[in-house]
Image (cartoon, rainbow, N blue to C red; front, side, top):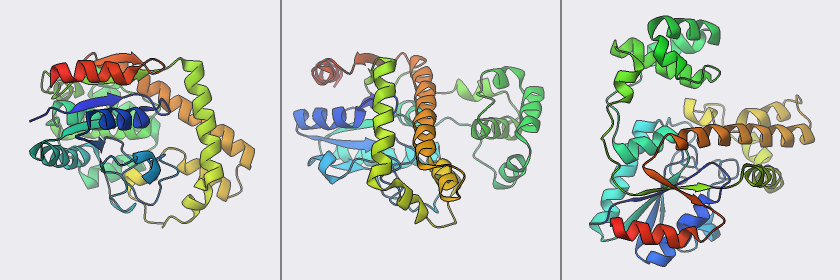
Amino acid sequence: MFSPIFILGPTGCGKSAIAVQVAQRLGNAEIVSADAYQVYRAMPILTAAPGLEEQQGVVHHLIGTMDVSENNDAATHARAAQTCIQDIQQRGNVPIITGGSGLYVKFISHGISPAPPSDAALRAELTALPLEECVRRFQEADPEGAAATDLHNPRYVVRNLEIVLLGGKPLSYWRNNWQPDACGPGFTLVRDVAELDARIARRATTMLEQGAIDEVAALPADLSPTAAKTLGLSLIQQHLNGELTRPELEAALALTTRQYAKRQRTWLRREPWATPLDANTDCVEAILKQGLRYL
């Protein structure tokens, strides 16, 4: 039974294409997405989900399988991914996990943290509070956990505070309960920051040219909390409301994506189990060489 191979990296680094090339070279591999948003079928352009041509005959899982009204958190996604992985292994194939959503990857690679599950009532209460109030409560309840959290990101603040309040223990307690080793070899694709920024700018332009604005305009009103957080969604909604011009939207979309990629790079540097690989070199050969040795 083959262990999963993890191909990771910040948005725009080309990991989806590399994963396909690795799968093609192996000949008996299938790809499982660890992306929080590509799972939604109504937003393939905005989430840069690989299309049929990009998939190039390689079976992909957890892409376009959920309605935007359904919520998708890291634990839910990890359980679905594990089901896919087990099925792939039982058929004698190699699972390749690719994505850049940190906690989603971590739950798949190191097991689901036993942190308390979300409580709808508490989540609603915290979400209704001003961010500053949530930060204050978080700092009082768990100063160390608050210091390790991006306090400018409401989603992280609310979820981490929720964990502390529900579990009655500091965030570090729950964060240190991963399995010690990953369930398979991991690789992080690395590009020069300036090059990655240029790729991201081209992606923002391409998304708008391909119809991301119409895609967002067609979405229903009852988006799930996860779907509503899709990168760039709120910016396009501002454009549709007349708050941003098309050039302003394109610039803001590129900026927001660069900022997200920076956070992803920071997270990946804290994951030493994933070997960094220069995406401009023959990283496919390196992944195959190291991955097959592990397998």
